[in-house]
Image 1 (cartoon, rainbow, N blue to C red):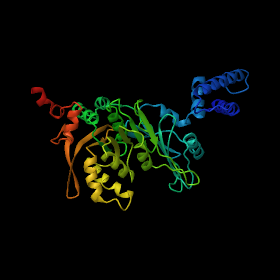
Image 2: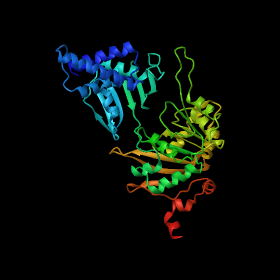
Image 3: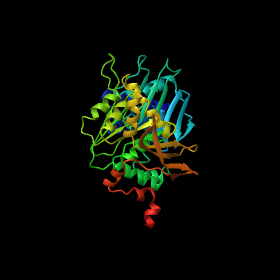
Image 4: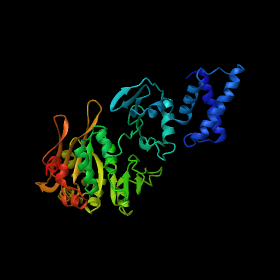
Length: 412
């Protein structure tokens, strides 16, 4: 940043303080203020009192980014191809562009990183200190922020996940090449029919995007309650209530964990329950909800659909010593109907690797599954499995044979 832009920025910051403008909330007020400051600066530069600005338009952008945005990181937030930004140390700022990591030329110092984090957390109501060295928060634009500070790590580590909304429905997933038309039609019918869906995959495999796309098939007449650690799903605007967790305050009180949200959601007349991600004991409360006849879906980290089912049979045991595998395993078998597993390809493309049915049967404490679609010869293809609850499909007006064997239905 040249001397003229730096001087203009300091003057704008002083005007913001004097007038009590909130840069994060009053974008229009900031634009008016910066335009007025620039006009005054130009008059003084013509009189030789301040250095001239080489590019006034670029100067406005730089000042707005520095005062109302995230400074040197703002251009990455505005780039639609960038999905995530992370800082390992001030001199190493990375971005993920369409799933592939890149080291940027941006170099920050310790003070800049701390100021950026402070700005990100200012309106979130979340705190970060030695007693709470981790934090998850949401920016005003919906981006998710995760920060870790020393002595847990050697330097301030920051991740900003943008959740670029390239897909909001199953047809969008087909357009992106993540799903075949036949598999999309089947999943649409499964969601409309009220089947319970578990979306699994590794980090950055596209689980949140997939669950948002699946939610796009939920009938508009249904009331949706979502439970998340921080707001990410951004479901379509209809009869929807979004809930997020809350950290404890400085006195250690007021925490609202995900388990509590799931329990409260059941008191809010839901027709459909969506849980952003299950990691711990909240899996138990989710299973109880789904086993009571409430349709729902959630995401879970796993390396395959089979491992996702196994993991879901383990997580509820964290809820307490009185929760046993003899209860959890058959409950998983009866509560979960489908597992949609995703993967991140080497080229950064996200795709569905398999769609697996949970048959409802248990053999030797192992939940039985059947492949409905699997990845073979570079494409998602029909396997030989069938989903449970065939009657639910019929009640919703779908014929399974035409969904899973369209060539047979076409020839009659």
